[in-house]
Image (cartoon, rainbow, N blue to C red):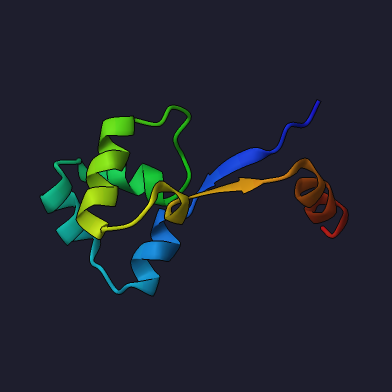
Length: 81
């Protein structure tokens, strides 16, 4: 059963707001490796305190950094490839 998926849009947000990775890493007490994993959607377990610090620093909502992809959107994407 396909229930959709959550995608982290942190990298897109960061680029759209012209914020350097270094500034976020330094101000949010997160390692470069961990931050890059978030930016590249290469994590399986979300560290909520890390996301809270990032949202606080960026002055954004969690919905600005996470996106739900519906099962229908996934199916359409697979059919178009």
